[in-house]
Image (cartoon, rainbow, N blue to C red; front, side, top):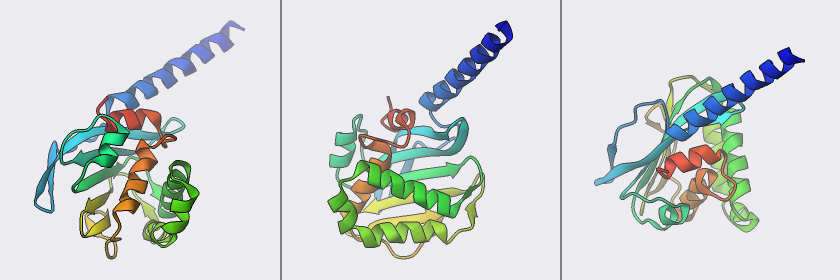
Length: 191
């Protein structure tokens, strides 16, 4: 019986340490600023996406100015960038489907229907890659007047999706009411 309690305590401690690591930010050393469409963006926050106890990706959110709430981020005009570094090998299909689940969990059904072509494109972009390897980068950028552009390993994936509302939907994957990871949401908001 004592052995079971020790094992349970060790498991609880390991889980607590992993959760704390998610709150403290990403292990990847992201740049503090980046430039997009002639605008200097500041890193608003970082974090690590965990699935169970496994790291999936480190992430940073860049904005024209800092914002500490989801509502403030969504209301902020100008270009925005989400940068990712894979922390394990993930199939492109799994990644694309995870993004779609995040979209569905955080956006109304009527918006999902309205943006079916864009969400289908998102699946196609990531499903077109057999996998994203550990250390590979991917990004999502929004530029007003140009739209949302996806990148894998720095290479643009097709043409931008010219729709500001779609990028708002994407942001809600991590900043919505039911984010993919609450610790990651807090990290991206710099909290």
